[in-house]
Length: 81
Image 1 (cartoon, rainbow, N blue to C red):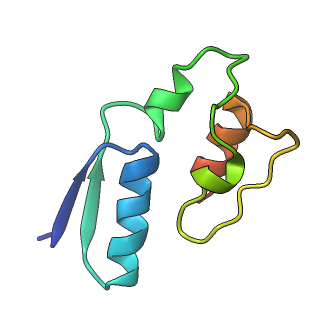
Image 2: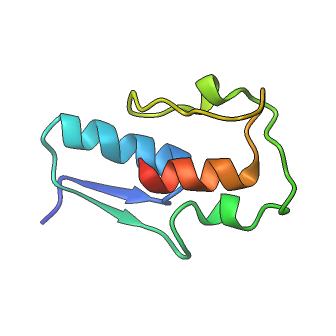
């Protein structure tokens, strides 16, 4: 039995899971594809509009080599979080 069901394993779903964990809730993430599937399907050379600081979740620093992170950097970050 779960206290919380999270639909979607994208950045927002992961952020919800991190907060649920902090609150001691038993949760389950349901995702139809891979973790952060929406980012996985972005164009290979895509760069985000936001800075890495605005994309951070769970207090985990998002370090990017650029002012705005790339798709590859984002996939690595969210899979690591």
